[in-house]
Image (cartoon, rainbow, N blue to C red):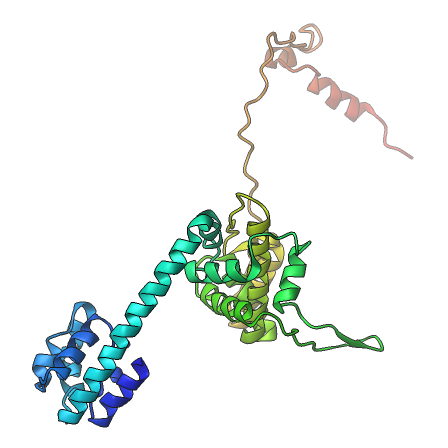
Length: 317
């Protein structure tokens, strides 16, 4: 219905979609309802902009300078009425979903802790997977049922590229969308996994691989009570092997002309308190009659005597 409204605007040379990213947002709906009521003045229509759209008023004046007529206004009124009816129907369906999902609020909350998974995605996963995970012995069985495991194509010891099997289309679709959303997250393990695979296999295969990982995490959340997603951080792969990461980054710097010298970081001293002894043993020092200097310094073994013995020892033959 929104696309129909956009095409109808184009027929009378109204280029609202070229300025506003959402023609049915708060500003867009105010302009459309004003157009349907018979207002044609571009400046008056542009004044309906709200928020960040106010800075686009000069562009809106140019975009709303069209040729609307009576038939256009009638068709726009019909389309806006249908859009309002669809919004009411969607609100009714969402209210029904909320009433059915009231018993699973804890599961939905824990599923929503996964990056890229919102409440709608959590509802789809719960509806398709179910609450009881006894039908899937392991997380791998769940991923295989969803059709997110790589295919096994091997003949005569040679491995060929294998496509994923056909699985639940609703789960595959929603998890791949969640994978793309997780790839845009900051300081996220799933985003690091996405780009780690994308640089070798491509963006689409990386999206399927991240969707597979989300399915594994969802199985653990549904199968184990109280489990939530634990974020490892976007630098997980760098911290796993810091020496290899340092070599990789140094090679990249040397490739553009820099001279790199790697210095290992100092290990932090342990802050554990030293054990205290109740009584210190007596300190043994050199007898003053043998060497008064070492006895004055409190040394347990005479250094001067060792030097004399070393000088007097004959060299080996």
